[in-house]
Length: 131
Image (tube, rainbow, N blue to C red; front, side, top):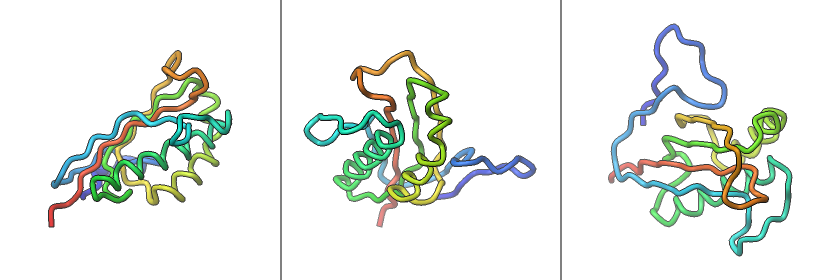
């Protein structure tokens, strides 16, 4: 995988401008902050983000992948201000669950998610190197 950061551009905080990779592609549906039984344990933004990231890692593992194979994420958040206010805790959760910031990312504020208690939904794309 090659992180793409054009010369002279400021280093993005928490993501890469782009990623080039080759291998087996894995597309992970939007994950939210409930448990494996579909129950929410928290309405805290960072806690829900952590749970969604853990789901992404679990789905990726089913394909034989690891967090470092994630090349792209799209975060859908219901409240931009809440997302920004939780930035430090979300960053900590990301580092603990995923690791380094090497994915190309987008974050989009949406009016609502399909599950009323969900505050964040995260989609991911991974590329697992062919051995």
